[in-house]
Image (cartoon, rainbow, N blue to C red; front, side, top):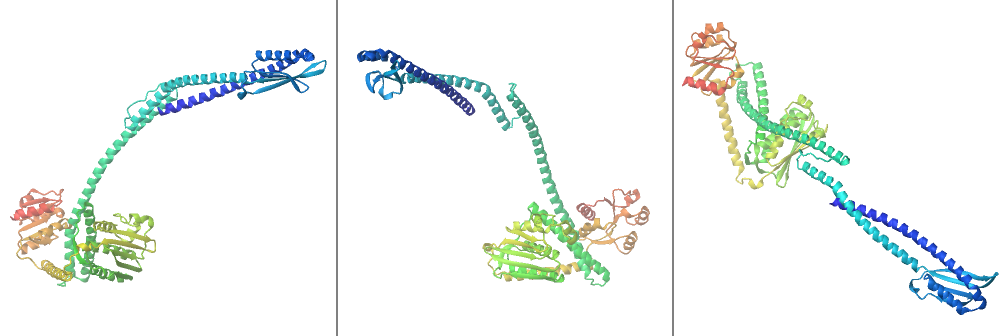
Length: 614
C-alpha cells in the first residue's frame, strides 16, 4: 500500500497541476477579452455623449444635459462618472450611486465636443472594472470546482486501475520472493499479462529453479563434507592411536638396543675390537636420536589426544636453568659458538612441570645450535610480576616473515631445504607451542633473514601454589636415591648381559629374521634364558653340548634337505616358525610340537610358549 499511495499522490498532484495551468490560461484569455470589450465600450460611450451634447452646449441648457447624463449612467452600470468640462470648468456631471469606492478600478476616457472645428467643451468618462472582476471571480470559482471534481474522479479511477493492475502483480512478486527467502523453491510464479510483468515472472521462475538446484547441490555437498569430516576425525584418531602404539612398540626394542649397545661399548672383557666398539657407538648414537624422534611423535600424539597430564611440583627454576646451561654450553663450545646465560636471581622456586619446561627450553636451544654456524646464542631468564620470561636468542640463518605464521605448525620448517641441510622433522616447535599452552603460557617468535631469531617463552610462576617446606633437603635426597637406582640398574644390566642365568630354563632359537624376533626375544628373556644362533650347523653344535627345554627354528631360509638331516633328534622340543608360502612336509610336521606362521604377534607367541612349558 505504500507504493500505491506514492503513485496515486504523484499522479493526482500532476493532474491538479495540469488542470491549474489550463485554468490559468483560460482565465487569463477571458480577462484580456473583457478588458478589450470594456475599452471599446468606453470609447463608444464617450463619442456618443460628445455628439449628443453639442446642441445643448450651444444653448447652454445644463439641467437638460444633467438629465441626459443621468439617463446614460443609469443604463450602463459600468459607468462610474460622466463630466462635461467647458473652459476648464465642470458644467455638468453625474456619478453612479452604486459604485463601490473601496474597491474601484477606473478606465478614463475623454473626447472633445466640437462643431465646425470649434471646441465647445470636453467629455470625460470613467468606467469601473468591478463587473469584469465579478465575471472573472465567477469563472475562477467554476474552474476550481471543476478541477477538484475532475481530480477526485481521476484519483478514484487511477486508484482502481493501479491497485487492480499494477499492485496485484507486485503483491504476487512480493509473496513469491518471500517464499524463496523461506527456502520454498518449488512454487511457480504464474503471471500472464503479455508485458514486462510476465517477462519478470519468467526470470524469477528461472532464478528459483537455479537456486533450488544450487540448494540441493549444497545440501549434498554438506552431507558429503560432514561425512568426510567424520571420516577425517576417525582417520586422525586412528593415526594418533597408530602413532602412539607404534611409538611404544618401537621404544621397547630401541631401549634394549640402546642399553645393550651402551653396555657392550664398555668392552669389559676386551672381546671387541676398536672398530666394533666404534660401530657400537654409532649404533648407540643413532638409537638415541631415533628414540628422541619417537618421543616427539609420542608426545605429539598424546597432545592431540589430550592425554598428557602435567606433573606439577615445586622446584628451583635457577637450578633447572643452570642444568640446561651446563648441558648446552659444551655443545656450543664444540661448534665455536659463544653461549651467554643471564638469570635474574630473585626468581627461585616456582610451581610447574619441571620436565616439560626443560623439554621446551632444550628444544629451543637445540634449534639455535642447529642453525647457528658462528655467532652467539643467548639464554635469558627475566622476572615479570607473577610470570617469568625465558628468551632464547641467536644470530643464525633467520626465518622469512611470511613463514613465521606457520613456524609452530607440525611437520613444517621454514624451508624444505632446511630439513635436507640441517635435519629435523618439524615437530619440535609444534610440541613447544602445545606444551606452553598446556602450561598456561605462550611462546612467540621474531626473526629476520641472516640476522637471527628470538623465541620468547612466557610462563606463570604459580607462586600461590609453591610448597614452603625446605626444598634443598628433598632435592638432595631425591638425587641420592636416583643415583643409587641408576648404579643398581647399571650393575644389573651388566650382570644380566655378561652372566648366565642358571635358574632359568634354556630355549635355543635359530633366528633367520632378527627384526621379527627382536621384540619376542626381549619378552622371552624375562622368563627364559634365550640362546640365539644364525645357522643350522651352529644349532646342531649347541644341541650336542647343552640341553634345551625348547628348540625354536625359523625355517623360512632353510632347505628341505637341511630339515631332513637335522630335525630327527628334536622330537617333543621343536617349534617351527614359517612364512605363509613355506610348504612343510608331513614328516617335519610330525616331529614338531607347534607350528607358528608369520607375521608373528608377540602376545600370541609368548602365550603359546608359556602354555607349552606349563
